[in-house]
Length: 74
Length: 239
Image 1 (cartoon, rainbow over the protein chains, first blue to last red):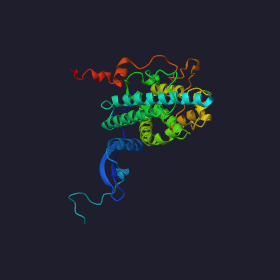
Image 2: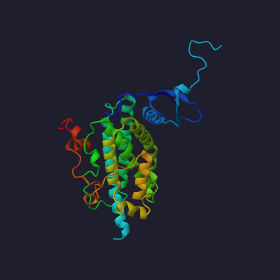
Image 3: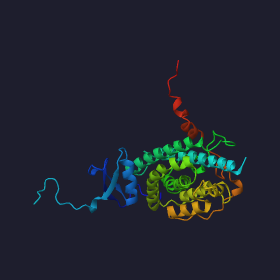
Image 4: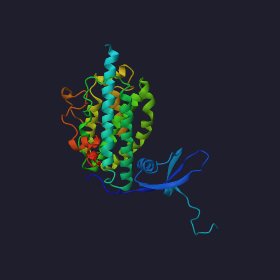
Protein backbone atom coordinates (compact mmCIF):
# COMPACT_ATOMS: atom_id res chain seq x y z
CA UNK A 1 0.00 0.00 0.00
CA UNK A 2 1.23 3.48 -0.79
CA UNK A 3 0.29 5.06 2.52
CA UNK A 4 0.96 4.52 6.19
CA UNK A 5 -1.92 3.71 8.49
CA UNK A 6 -0.67 6.29 10.91
CA UNK A 7 1.07 9.38 9.54
CA UNK A 8 4.84 9.29 9.96
CA UNK A 9 5.15 12.80 11.39
CA UNK A 10 2.23 14.45 13.10
CA UNK A 11 1.57 17.60 15.08
CA UNK A 12 -1.08 18.21 17.67
CA UNK A 13 -3.35 21.18 17.18
CA UNK A 14 -5.72 22.74 19.71
CA UNK A 15 -9.08 23.86 18.33
CA UNK A 16 -10.67 27.10 19.50
CA UNK A 17 -14.14 28.41 18.67
CA UNK A 18 -16.95 30.73 19.77
CA UNK A 19 -20.66 30.97 19.06
CA UNK A 20 -21.01 34.76 19.27
CA UNK A 21 -18.72 37.70 18.72
CA UNK A 22 -19.18 38.83 22.32
CA UNK A 23 -17.97 35.49 23.69
CA UNK A 24 -14.29 34.78 24.20
CA UNK A 25 -12.73 31.99 22.16
CA UNK A 26 -12.62 28.75 24.10
CA UNK A 27 -10.82 25.51 23.54
CA UNK A 28 -13.26 22.94 22.16
CA UNK A 29 -10.85 20.09 21.49
CA UNK A 30 -7.77 19.02 19.59
CA UNK A 31 -6.74 17.14 16.46
CA UNK A 32 -3.64 15.29 15.30
CA UNK A 33 -2.53 15.73 11.68
CA UNK A 34 0.61 15.78 9.52
CA UNK A 35 0.03 19.31 8.18
CA UNK A 36 -2.11 22.43 8.58
CA UNK A 37 -4.40 21.52 5.65
CA UNK A 38 -5.46 18.21 7.10
CA UNK A 39 -5.66 19.67 10.61
CA UNK A 40 -8.16 22.26 9.30
CA UNK A 41 -10.21 19.57 7.57
CA UNK A 42 -10.19 17.37 10.69
CA UNK A 43 -11.06 20.24 13.05
CA UNK A 44 -13.99 21.29 10.92
CA UNK A 45 -15.27 17.71 10.52
CA UNK A 46 -14.88 16.84 14.20
CA UNK A 47 -16.14 20.00 15.90
CA UNK A 48 -18.72 21.27 13.40
CA UNK A 49 -21.76 20.26 15.45
CA UNK A 50 -22.28 23.78 16.86
CA UNK A 51 -23.03 26.97 14.97
CA UNK A 52 -19.67 28.59 15.57
CA UNK A 53 -19.11 32.11 14.26
CA UNK A 54 -15.38 31.54 14.46
CA UNK A 55 -13.06 28.56 14.62
CA UNK A 56 -9.27 28.45 14.63
CA UNK A 57 -6.52 25.95 15.26
CA UNK A 58 -3.13 26.45 16.89
CA UNK A 59 -0.22 24.00 16.72
CA UNK A 60 0.32 22.97 20.34
CA UNK A 61 4.08 23.38 20.00
CA UNK A 62 3.53 27.08 19.19
CA UNK A 63 2.00 27.68 22.62
CA UNK A 64 4.33 29.13 25.23
CA UNK A 65 3.38 27.87 28.65
CA UNK A 66 4.05 30.13 31.64
CA UNK A 67 3.00 27.61 34.26
CA UNK A 68 0.91 24.45 34.45
CA UNK A 69 -1.63 23.11 36.99
CA UNK A 70 0.13 22.39 40.26
CA UNK A 71 3.01 24.72 39.50
CA UNK A 72 3.32 28.00 41.31
CA UNK A 73 3.18 31.29 39.45
CA UNK A 74 6.47 32.59 40.80
CA UNK B 1 -37.65 25.97 -30.09
CA UNK B 2 -34.84 28.51 -29.87
CA UNK B 3 -31.23 27.96 -28.92
CA UNK B 4 -32.08 29.02 -25.36
CA UNK B 5 -34.25 25.95 -25.02
CA UNK B 6 -31.42 23.69 -26.12
CA UNK B 7 -29.16 25.33 -23.54
CA UNK B 8 -31.77 24.79 -20.87
CA UNK B 9 -31.95 21.08 -21.62
CA UNK B 10 -28.18 20.76 -21.50
CA UNK B 11 -28.04 22.59 -18.20
CA UNK B 12 -30.66 20.23 -16.81
CA UNK B 13 -28.58 17.20 -17.85
CA UNK B 14 -25.39 18.69 -16.46
CA UNK B 15 -26.92 19.54 -13.07
CA UNK B 16 -28.66 16.15 -12.92
CA UNK B 17 -25.31 14.43 -13.52
CA UNK B 18 -23.67 16.64 -10.90
CA UNK B 19 -26.41 15.71 -8.40
CA UNK B 20 -26.12 11.99 -9.18
CA UNK B 21 -22.36 12.07 -8.79
CA UNK B 22 -22.58 14.02 -5.54
CA UNK B 23 -25.07 11.58 -4.09
CA UNK B 24 -22.90 8.60 -4.98
CA UNK B 25 -19.70 10.30 -3.86
CA UNK B 26 -21.36 11.07 -0.50
CA UNK B 27 -22.36 7.45 -0.14
CA UNK B 28 -18.88 6.19 -1.04
CA UNK B 29 -17.29 8.58 1.48
CA UNK B 30 -19.71 7.47 4.17
CA UNK B 31 -18.87 3.81 3.50
CA UNK B 32 -15.39 4.59 4.87
CA UNK B 33 -16.56 6.16 8.14
CA UNK B 34 -15.24 3.20 10.15
CA UNK B 35 -12.55 2.02 7.75
CA UNK B 36 -10.27 5.04 7.20
CA UNK B 37 -6.64 4.96 8.43
CA UNK B 38 -7.25 7.05 11.56
CA UNK B 39 -10.11 8.13 13.80
CA UNK B 40 -9.87 11.68 12.47
CA UNK B 41 -10.08 10.39 8.90
CA UNK B 42 -13.12 8.26 9.86
CA UNK B 43 -14.90 11.35 11.16
CA UNK B 44 -13.87 13.41 8.13
CA UNK B 45 -15.20 10.67 5.81
CA UNK B 46 -18.55 10.72 7.60
CA UNK B 47 -18.72 14.54 7.58
CA UNK B 48 -17.79 14.82 3.90
CA UNK B 49 -20.32 12.10 3.07
CA UNK B 50 -23.07 14.08 4.76
CA UNK B 51 -21.96 17.26 2.98
CA UNK B 52 -22.14 15.68 -0.45
CA UNK B 53 -25.46 13.95 0.15
CA UNK B 54 -26.78 17.35 1.29
CA UNK B 55 -25.37 19.00 -1.83
CA UNK B 56 -27.05 16.42 -4.04
CA UNK B 57 -30.41 17.20 -2.42
CA UNK B 58 -30.00 20.91 -3.13
CA UNK B 59 -29.01 20.16 -6.73
CA UNK B 60 -31.95 17.77 -7.27
CA UNK B 61 -34.20 20.43 -5.75
CA UNK B 62 -32.97 22.98 -8.30
CA UNK B 63 -33.68 20.74 -11.31
CA UNK B 64 -37.35 21.54 -11.65
CA UNK B 65 -36.41 25.16 -12.20
CA UNK B 66 -34.01 24.27 -15.01
CA UNK B 67 -36.45 23.15 -17.67
CA UNK B 68 -37.81 19.75 -18.54
CA UNK B 69 -35.97 16.44 -18.46
CA UNK B 70 -36.68 15.59 -22.13
CA UNK B 71 -34.58 12.72 -23.35
CA UNK B 72 -33.22 11.76 -19.94
CA UNK B 73 -34.06 8.52 -18.23
CA UNK B 74 -34.81 9.86 -14.77
CA UNK B 75 -34.23 6.52 -13.11
CA UNK B 76 -30.71 6.02 -14.45
CA UNK B 77 -27.72 7.51 -12.69
CA UNK B 78 -25.49 9.76 -14.78
CA UNK B 79 -22.36 9.07 -12.76
CA UNK B 80 -18.69 8.51 -13.48
CA UNK B 81 -17.55 4.84 -13.58
CA UNK B 82 -15.30 5.51 -10.56
CA UNK B 83 -18.43 5.57 -8.39
CA UNK B 84 -20.12 2.47 -9.87
CA UNK B 85 -18.81 0.16 -7.15
CA UNK B 86 -17.59 0.54 -3.55
CA UNK B 87 -13.90 1.35 -3.19
CA UNK B 88 -11.64 -1.36 -1.84
CA UNK B 89 -8.58 0.73 -1.01
CA UNK B 90 -8.04 4.02 0.84
CA UNK B 91 -5.98 5.20 -2.16
CA UNK B 92 -9.21 5.20 -4.19
CA UNK B 93 -10.87 7.37 -1.56
CA UNK B 94 -7.95 9.80 -1.63
CA UNK B 95 -7.88 10.10 -5.43
CA UNK B 96 -11.65 10.66 -5.58
CA UNK B 97 -11.46 13.18 -2.76
CA UNK B 98 -8.59 15.12 -4.33
CA UNK B 99 -9.39 14.97 -8.04
CA UNK B 100 -13.00 14.01 -8.77
CA UNK B 101 -14.47 16.03 -5.90
CA UNK B 102 -12.43 19.03 -7.07
CA UNK B 103 -13.75 18.63 -10.63
CA UNK B 104 -17.33 18.62 -9.32
CA UNK B 105 -16.57 21.64 -7.14
CA UNK B 106 -15.16 23.56 -10.09
CA UNK B 107 -18.38 22.92 -11.99
CA UNK B 108 -20.36 24.16 -8.96
CA UNK B 109 -18.17 27.26 -8.99
CA UNK B 110 -18.87 27.70 -12.71
CA UNK B 111 -22.63 27.40 -12.05
CA UNK B 112 -22.59 29.60 -8.93
CA UNK B 113 -20.86 32.35 -10.90
CA UNK B 114 -22.97 31.93 -14.03
CA UNK B 115 -26.16 33.81 -14.87
CA UNK B 116 -28.78 31.31 -13.69
CA UNK B 117 -30.23 32.93 -10.59
CA UNK B 118 -31.48 29.80 -8.81
CA UNK B 119 -28.00 28.29 -8.97
CA UNK B 120 -26.25 31.54 -8.07
CA UNK B 121 -28.24 31.78 -4.86
CA UNK B 122 -28.25 28.14 -3.80
CA UNK B 123 -24.77 26.83 -4.58
CA UNK B 124 -22.50 29.30 -2.77
CA UNK B 125 -22.66 27.54 0.62
CA UNK B 126 -21.47 24.30 -0.99
CA UNK B 127 -18.25 25.99 -2.00
CA UNK B 128 -17.46 26.88 1.63
CA UNK B 129 -17.92 23.24 2.68
CA UNK B 130 -16.01 21.92 -0.31
CA UNK B 131 -12.94 23.88 0.73
CA UNK B 132 -12.39 21.34 3.51
CA UNK B 133 -12.87 18.38 1.16
CA UNK B 134 -10.16 19.86 -1.01
CA UNK B 135 -7.77 20.44 1.91
CA UNK B 136 -8.38 16.88 3.08
CA UNK B 137 -7.87 15.35 -0.36
CA UNK B 138 -4.79 17.37 -1.23
CA UNK B 139 -3.04 16.64 2.04
CA UNK B 140 -3.76 12.91 1.84
CA UNK B 141 -2.66 12.84 -1.80
CA UNK B 142 0.77 14.17 -0.79
CA UNK B 143 1.06 11.26 1.65
CA UNK B 144 -0.75 8.45 -0.10
CA UNK B 145 1.04 8.44 -3.49
CA UNK B 146 -1.60 6.50 -5.38
CA UNK B 147 -0.78 6.87 -9.08
CA UNK B 148 -3.20 4.31 -10.62
CA UNK B 149 -6.17 5.65 -8.68
CA UNK B 150 -5.17 9.26 -9.33
CA UNK B 151 -4.72 8.63 -13.07
CA UNK B 152 -8.16 7.05 -13.22
CA UNK B 153 -9.76 9.88 -11.24
CA UNK B 154 -8.07 12.40 -13.56
CA UNK B 155 -9.21 10.68 -16.71
CA UNK B 156 -12.79 10.33 -15.52
CA UNK B 157 -12.83 13.96 -14.38
CA UNK B 158 -11.82 15.05 -17.88
CA UNK B 159 -14.47 12.83 -19.41
CA UNK B 160 -17.06 14.22 -17.02
CA UNK B 161 -16.14 17.82 -17.90
CA UNK B 162 -16.59 16.73 -21.50
CA UNK B 163 -15.08 17.55 -24.88
CA UNK B 164 -14.39 21.02 -26.18
CA UNK B 165 -17.16 22.48 -28.30
CA UNK B 166 -19.93 20.47 -26.59
CA UNK B 167 -22.53 21.43 -23.97
CA UNK B 168 -20.14 22.95 -21.41
CA UNK B 169 -18.63 25.35 -23.94
CA UNK B 170 -22.08 26.18 -25.24
CA UNK B 171 -23.35 26.90 -21.71
CA UNK B 172 -20.29 29.07 -21.13
CA UNK B 173 -21.06 31.07 -24.29
CA UNK B 174 -24.58 31.67 -22.97
CA UNK B 175 -23.17 32.88 -19.66
CA UNK B 176 -24.72 30.02 -17.69
CA UNK B 177 -21.32 28.67 -16.76
CA UNK B 178 -18.49 30.96 -15.70
CA UNK B 179 -15.80 28.60 -17.10
CA UNK B 180 -15.39 26.73 -20.38
CA UNK B 181 -13.82 23.28 -20.83
CA UNK B 182 -10.25 24.57 -21.19
CA UNK B 183 -10.55 26.73 -18.08
CA UNK B 184 -12.04 23.87 -16.08
CA UNK B 185 -9.15 21.60 -17.07
CA UNK B 186 -6.57 24.26 -16.24
CA UNK B 187 -8.16 25.09 -12.87
CA UNK B 188 -8.34 21.41 -11.96
CA UNK B 189 -4.62 20.92 -12.64
CA UNK B 190 -3.83 24.04 -10.62
CA UNK B 191 -5.98 22.94 -7.70
CA UNK B 192 -4.73 19.39 -7.37
CA UNK B 193 -1.13 20.45 -8.05
CA UNK B 194 -0.67 17.86 -10.80
CA UNK B 195 -1.18 17.53 -14.52
CA UNK B 196 -3.54 15.20 -16.29
CA UNK B 197 -1.91 11.88 -17.20
CA UNK B 198 -1.35 11.47 -20.95
CA UNK B 199 -4.39 9.53 -22.10
CA UNK B 200 -6.39 9.64 -25.27
CA UNK B 201 -10.09 9.89 -24.62
CA UNK B 202 -12.22 8.34 -27.31
CA UNK B 203 -14.87 11.04 -27.52
CA UNK B 204 -16.78 9.00 -30.13
CA UNK B 205 -17.79 6.74 -27.26
CA UNK B 206 -18.79 9.62 -24.97
CA UNK B 207 -22.31 9.40 -23.61
CA UNK B 208 -23.39 13.05 -23.38
CA UNK B 209 -26.07 12.38 -20.77
CA UNK B 210 -23.98 10.21 -18.47
CA UNK B 211 -20.77 12.11 -19.29
CA UNK B 212 -18.58 8.99 -19.59
CA UNK B 213 -17.17 6.71 -22.27
CA UNK B 214 -17.32 3.46 -20.32
CA UNK B 215 -20.52 1.40 -20.46
CA UNK B 216 -22.04 -0.12 -17.34
CA UNK B 217 -23.32 1.61 -14.25
CA UNK B 218 -23.90 1.28 -10.54
CA UNK B 219 -24.34 -2.25 -9.21
CA UNK B 220 -27.66 -3.56 -7.88
CA UNK B 221 -26.60 -3.29 -4.21
CA UNK B 222 -25.71 0.38 -4.69
CA UNK B 223 -29.01 1.08 -6.45
CA UNK B 224 -31.00 -0.56 -3.66
CA UNK B 225 -29.08 1.36 -1.04
CA UNK B 226 -29.74 4.65 -2.83
CA UNK B 227 -33.42 3.95 -3.27
CA UNK B 228 -33.84 2.84 0.32
CA UNK B 229 -34.89 -0.61 -0.88
CA UNK B 230 -32.20 -2.30 1.15
CA UNK B 231 -33.78 -0.98 4.35
CA UNK B 232 -37.40 -1.49 3.38
CA UNK B 233 -37.14 -5.22 3.83
CA UNK B 234 -36.72 -4.60 7.58
CA UNK B 235 -39.90 -2.54 7.82
CA UNK B 236 -42.80 -4.15 9.67
CA UNK B 237 -45.48 -5.54 7.41
CA UNK B 238 -48.56 -3.33 7.64
CA UNK B 239 -51.80 -5.17 8.33
